[in-house]
Image (tube, rainbow, N blue to C red; front, side, top):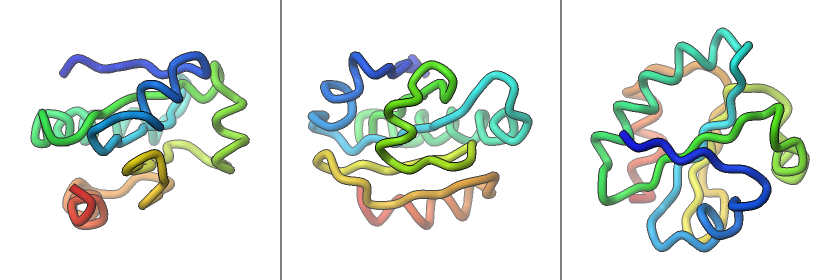
Length: 106
C-alpha cells in the first residue's frame, strides 16, 4: 500500500475534497495500540484499493486536525465521505468489526 501521510497542509485536498471515501488513521510512533491497528489498516487499504483512500495522520505533527475533530485518544480511525465524518472508532478493534462499521459507506 502506498500510504499517504497527511498533515495540516494537505488535509483539505487529500481528505475533505477527495472523490473517494477516506479512512483516516490518527496514530503516533510511541503508541502501542496504534502498532496493533496498523497491520489491519494496511489490509483494509489493500482490500479496498480503488474504492477507498487510506491515509495516516501523525498525532504529534498535526495537533490542529486532532483538535478540530476532537480526537482525544489514539488510535482513532475516522471514515470521511464527501468531506464529512461518517464513522469514528477509537482504540483497537478487530478487522471484522472495523469492516462492519465502515463498509456501509463504500
